[in-house]
Length: 334
Image 1 (tube, rainbow, N blue to C red):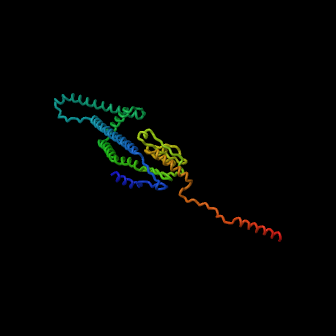
Image 2: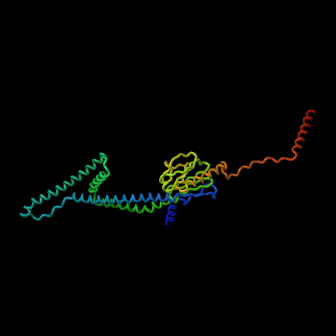
Image 3: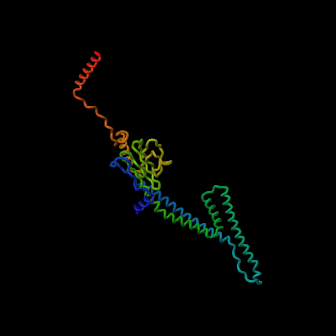
């Protein structure tokens, strides 16, 4: 299942499943991968992030449920009681009228007191917002809640349904993204390639943005191994290959250099055999330099061999001297 989903995603993103081998002898190709604990660390971070997101969703569900109850209570308190139907006036009803007036005045005073308290809370929240008064976490939350209750109570009842709709959509999106983000975290491990030949090395990583760099041994100046505290705990290390003109910038937890891409840095991120990789690169770098500058496979221009020695060199030299002497004598006579 995972293999099928990976193939579909790579086909959709137009990403080749693996890079081509760098320049060099195919028989010398060595391929290295990130350590298994690097995958475990990525999955742990993914799990923590998902638990945090789920806790946030549950929290806001509770907040909006509480807001809905408070808004409904405030609406009931703000609604004036409906007057009861009165029978035709009779002497007995006329005598009870003063008592009814007393009850009505009591209800009105209670409602007006509630309104006064709500308005005071709203004014306090507005004053804190305008004055940018620093509130504690709980004070700020309660002030925000009171303000939201006052605001939502002025809206039509379907407004709360819209808020709940957003919450439900957020939960659906959370559930749908779980397999996608898990797949991306796993593929970030599987699509890390570290290739070394006798002439060069090639590093590729990334899914949405594919980063591939190739370095020739002719430009490599430094190879070092580094290990952070967490990597030491997990048995992982980084091998940094520096070429001419590169800086000494670090890298983030995903193997990307700080401050953007560094074209002069090749990073074997979170490998378990860092010393083996370093020794292999140094050994092949030494052989490359001992073979001379340029392409070791180039055909050397043959050095012309000296002309063959002709037998009888001394006789020819003697004859030439005699001939030169006769020419001088003849020139003197003339």
